Amino acid sequence: MSLRIVVTVKYVPDATGDRHFADDLTVDRDDVDGLLSELDEYAVEQALQISENSDDDVEVTVLTVGPEDAKDALRKALSMGADKAIHVEDDDLHGTDAIGTSLVLAKAIEKAGYDLVISGMASTDGTMGIVPALVAERLGVPQITLLSEVSVEGGTITGRRDNDAASETLEASLPAVVSVTDQSGEARYPSFKGIMAAKKKPVESWDLSDLEIEADEVGLEGAYTKVDAANERPARTAGTIVKDEGEGGKQLAEFLAGQKFI
Amino acid sequence: MAEVLVYVDHVDGAVRKPTLELLTLARRIGEPVAVALGNGAGDTAAVLAEHGAVKVLTHEASEYAEYLVVPKVDALQAAVEQVSPAAVLVPSSAEAKEVAARLALRIGSGIITDAVDVEAGEEGPVATQSVFAASFTTKSRVVKGTPVITVKPNSASVEAAPAAGTVEALSVTFSEKATGTKVTGRTARESTGRPELTEAAIVVSGGRGVNGAENFGLIEALADSLGAAVGASRAAVDAGWYPHTNQVGQTGKSVSPQLYIANGISGAIQHRAGMQTSKTIVAINKDAEAPIFDLVDYGVVGDLFDVVPQLTEEIKTRKG
Ligand SMILES: Cc1cc2nc3c(=O)[nH]c(=O)nc-3n(C[C@H](O)[C@H](O)[C@H](O)COP(=O)(O)OP(=O)(O)OC[C@H]3O[C@@H](n4cnc5c(N)ncnc54)[C@H](O)[C@@H]3O)c2cc1C
Ligand SMILES: Nc1ncnc2c1ncn2[C@@H]1O[C@H](COP(=O)(O)O)[C@@H](O)[C@H]1O
Image 1 (tube, each protein chain N blue to C red):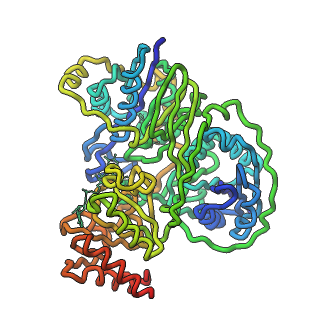
Image 2: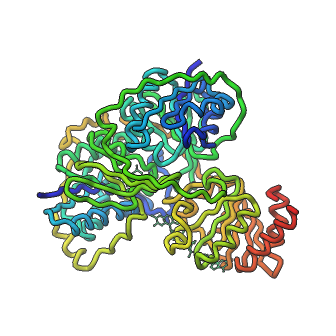
Image 3: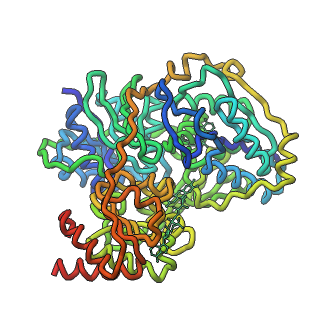
């Protein structure tokens, strides 16, 4: 038997950089260095572990929808150990929202062929955490998401999902869409060998016409939502900072009392 | 007047506070019609009526607890078809966000997640979001279909606004996909007796500086003196000192209390992402250069092992 895993990974502006918006109110991707969203490293890691723990013939494909530079994210995933990569890139994709992104991902996943899709819990720029659910809805397969533990055995996938009120164990049949949290296990660092090997791994490029998607279904024009304004939050007014000389706790209590918290 | 659907987050009939906040926001746009699903759905009506629900659509079925997400999408879709609302408001819990997303896709609508405010606008509801770790505030609209908006806890006040709250049974036919993901086990989280982290008015958090699970007692004692919830940084959670359910930040809970007290937390961007919108921020940290001090209204540079117990004592004394 063989198992085809597609891992969806996003290329995002570095969260520790000075992120901001471009003039058209889309996320500015030029002024801040980009990288493979850290939360998607966990998805790559789980795909590799499933592959390593399986007797089947497993193929791990990483898929991204994003601009030219998004290739960096694919390279990183390949150097961690993924087998091949698909890059969906098209000028008309600029400004695509979550609904549109899920359309492109679903069409690309179908074209690639899959038994299992693994996503991150959320992108570190949009932080919506809904794309995996949307992809599952579009593909018409079970979603088994936000897992902190995951395993695949035969045609069955099981996992643990920690909700607000309870911790749940879940089960679904393949094909399915999984998303994993940062509690699922540390992601590995690419080895030197992995980095060298990644340079030779295949990266396919697809555009919208390859996926039979019309330009007006995606991009800013096709978006279902519109950002009317984006304003930098005013810096918080500088607070009072005191050095503890033995009375720090009492001084703080005095402040809290003044604010009516005590 | 237009009707606005409000998805009810409840535990066996006990309505959680963020849903009551949604009713306040919904009343700005139209008449709130609540949708309550699963065990105890009928018991939610009284409190929803007190806070403005003109109607409460209920449906009880074991599927809601036995299968993940999709049964709820089926029900919410049935409600949308019955009511033809001006908007659908959903609390921003992890599960409800997934439900909202699939609903939006099915009804051909756009979705906005994690709003911190919703107002009526000339071209439909306008949602305010706090993005890039709360360094920007955006105003957005859904421009296609019925706006589906998920709203974070603590985004509005809970207001009494008595309305009819007429209970009506919602008729739901589950789709073929409803049983795709089975819930094979559920372990309820033990209650600590402290307020829910995302709903608490005060949050007291500990980070790597707390230096050990055994020392979290200090943080809990401070929290209890204020009736607060306890939070933790990822460093403290990864070290195994405190449960992941209490993690504050990008991959934990996002909180927006009246008062946030950070103890031994440096203030990394991913931590700030989950607490930067707190009204008043206080920090205790022995490093005067820690980035958390850029955010504070009041900061104490000092050893938390000295400052926290003194603070707790002083609070207890003042409260008598
Ligand atoms: C994708 C991703 C997601 C993440 N998500 C989260 C998240 O959700 N939440 C989160 O918190 N982090 C998150 N992080 C991690 C984040 O980057 C930081 O590593 C983490 O917040 C640091 O925790 P800390 O402040 O407790 O530890 P540190 O950064 O080590 O800071 C400890 C602080 O304690 C002070 N201190 C030490 N001893 C004492 C003492 N005795 N008295 C007073 N002060 C003392 C030190 O001066 C220091 O400032 C994420 C990272 C990534 C990459
Ligand atoms: N442009 C994209 N390309 C590939 N995967 C994506 C993209 N956007 C989102 N995803 C996947 O969907 C997950 C959740 O994203 P989001 O709903 O945007 O928070 C991410 O962790 C990725 O696995």
